Image (tube, rainbow, N blue to C red; front, side):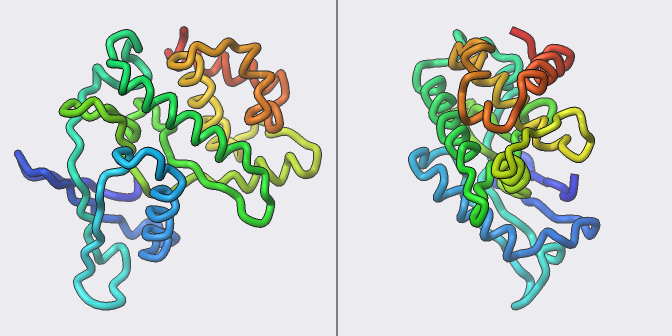
Length: 223
């Protein structure tokens, strides 16, 4: 939404250029979030492609710079939202399970002083979290604009739950919806099991769960 991505044919790299419409995106934020992700998912060393920010001069803004990233070839028919898990090899399925486990643990972190962050894989086609067709490895190809758990953690500390019907909670609603769907699809977890899981139950009411399950069905993410 806030950048353009370019790739020359047969190149092993992609170039990302950031638009002027998001001044909150800074060099410091981009670098800090990349370091955070690499640390949070350090148990999955192949998950995050390499990237390097090229700045035309010292002190150049992010919008003046170019982010160079390793290119990850992937196919739409292998999108996590539509692919049959049985079509994936055991290593790929294990990596998906590991990614979901790490992300669930990040969501379960309710520290108010240092809220955790999770990657943005809530886009409709799940095109930010893909399977590398060369190796079968799971890859997180968008490492910008992480989603903070500050709001749900604050609500939990106040004894409240996240109202997923409110527009202001749209992003977190999509995040929980995507997690619940992927857990059911790739880990074979039932709705009742997920509603008892503290990583989700601390943030969502039963009505909230039902709303997200229904929204997932409506979006074609049905099981």
